[in-house]
Image (cartoon, rainbow, N blue to C red; front, side, top):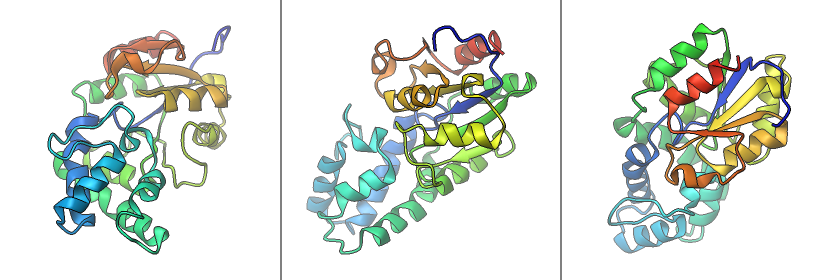
Length: 239
């Protein structure tokens, strides 16, 4: 936000591609999920991969994959017809219940994560997570990384505030912690994160650690950095 002079008091992080390595974590996880949903039927697995923007053979994500920027509800919408699933809500429950656990063997935090969080917490900043993953999956992953006490709020697409790029999670985070929007910086690796922050009136910081790198942002973010160490430095200078 141009013209903002209020000091930063809080940081709201996206999760996938920002705190954890998206490809290393979700490449094998979605392969396992798709195999589970398709009950091992390779033809159906390939159809699910195509619908999700995911390469069956390389386990890599296409740039416009809904598995990258979409919510679990978007995944359900793409998969339901292929799976001939009569109850989308039941399918959503199955995906939401299983995806966090399926990810744990592959969970890969960025090496700079702990040091960056320690520095920001040392400045007295309130930290939170806002993800288009489910809240339960996000909590499972954060706890598995030993970071459960680092975040004052963990919000998912199903926490009751809507998904990004809508502003709901950012607005809810501000309300929960008595913050003005321009006291918060939304940190993420995609335009969904940046647009969510801007729509709520927060500052925005892009990190070039996601599947699309710095090319994801254009000129939409207030600033773009290469990784979490640089992000912590940028935030500390404005806290």
